[in-house]
Length: 608
Image (tube, rainbow, N blue to C red):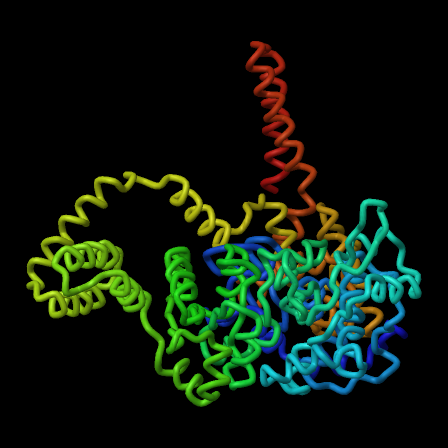
């Protein structure tokens, strides 16, 4: 940052921000008890273990252990520093940010990822300037305007143009003293046989690819003047900030619309997404390959449970839709198909038939996967021919038998029966035969999947086991954090925790309460987070998410303190038991008798 952000501004952002509003941009949250739960954005899971406590303004994942306040979430989610996360949260809440707290554009001294993100941001600005402000960009601008993309839409998607110049961008970054190692790592440059760098993208309309937070992490360049042997589209190679199996084009723009519409539309091309956006359909994304990967599906599962496929309406597009439906078998989602009429792609349809017709198609023309598949089969058969009728019927039943819903099965059986002139009874009998065949072929027990599901369930719901001493420490520090009189009594008695992580957190608590002059006041958990390191933030969030009663009793506090103070005796008991086992193994009865006496004495002390 250009200057240190003062505490007053941090306090203002904190007071005007609800952590639920921020996290909801990334995670689909549902109320469960007093907290909200969703799928963790930091690791893949099937059972939601990511919890948000709105009353305390903190989050915690019971599975991976991450936790913190709203700034920590943005730091983890977007790889930002604390000052950058404060500015980011302020921007989300439309809180005015004084100029002196904005990030410096000349700073390349951060982490590798931040350096590359800054490079891509500045490259995009350069390409945009060339497109919109220079004669070199005029042909590319005419091409985009010819596809009904006005300057406002071009700026929304940060479109640009890389001119046919082998070292324009290279010189741009060399002037900014970027070293060759970083230039090579960025993926913005290629290398000739002599090891000399040159601009990777030339004579191409540049489409930036962003991460979920909106940072530009890659480019896809469309060739403007196609020549033989030149690829129509060229994508950035994978880099430390870009993994094509994770990235989804337009996700950062589409997140809110996906949540609001409770669905995402999967398009085939970037231009389809942009045209749909202009037409008012703003919940569209495109993958970086031919099908959605597990990582992309997981990202979407945090935002919605409905995926609608809208590929081209021509024969290759229909084939691609069929392939996509056969691959999209993740049971976290329901699926639909939006078929574009007249063998057009979505972009062509919008330009020829208008935005209103496309919006109506999206809102009212979603087919079920089975409806699309049956229509797909019909394309390949002459249903006036008996042989083709039987083939069509067999293929259709092999798909219908996979359905789980009895109502859906009955509906499609009825349609096929009417269409083919066959009784529903005969079709249902055939389905029963297919089910028996499938049951024979199916393994008795997919042990790997069963074990995985059991593991996910356990990691999402069961806390680690703690011994009596550590349970006492966790409860005691919880009460010390939330009740100042407990904190003051522990401080005055010179009490110390056994485990270093709890003692470190307690020391931070005392230091914070003294600095804030809140020794005798309740601690604001979210504010307290800001002075802790990552491990302490995770621990504090974990402790604050424990199911604890509203009040404590003095006897309870005394018991915890006694348990912790007697921990030396607990360790002694463990040690004597270990030595007793060793003495028994070698048959030393004299030592066994002596150790047994010691054990009785120590247990007597513990009981007292």
